[in-house]
Image 1 (cartoon, one colour):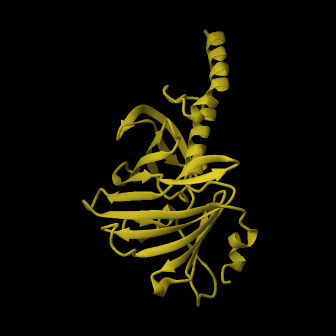
Image 2 (tube, one colour):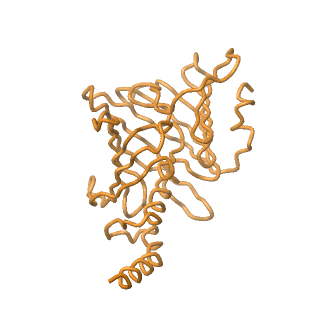
Image 3 (tube, helix red, strand yellow):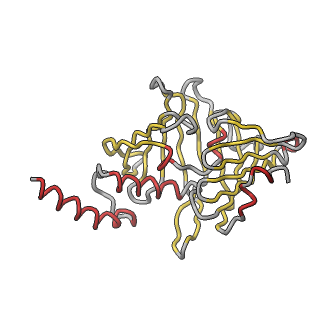
Length: 255
């Protein structure tokens, strides 16, 4: 039986890359390497790339109203710099995330101030929501039973934060089998209470190494404790390209 199981594992490891191109109709495998690849691919559509920048606008209550906040975001791998563009009073404020640590800076401060990724930004959005995701490394993933969400066959994972630096303590995460993008998330406290949920859309397209892939276009976050309050994050004009080191240097943040 051990020999049969070993052979099956080796064969699955050889065939698994096919699921990353759309042939993903089987149950999620239990082995860590396959789980890692699924989460890594989902992260790549949320900013985890060699270099990408985008515009994000945040509206509370109604996504058709004037944007409450706006940022120009630059991301390289897991490091992110977000510079406020709206409202006018916040223009030039910056949020920097490097190696999981986050700082806030605004003109006039003598030095950047450390903040937590889970700290509230506006509405139901946290500072960590505007940054690139690194669920693959920030969380321990346990596969759950597959589910269908809005007609999409999904892998489902229970993600538990490895450290308190993570934006959320625990996430139930749905990933489309066909596209390997995160389509839904439920967020829980350490005690297990759900406090918000999110639905993600990927109408943006980027090209990486001559391959097109979907990129995040909207996140609709609902407050599950306060009722019907929604916060909409809209991601526009993603652009792939090299981003110099100085953008992620905390000592140069005042520039």
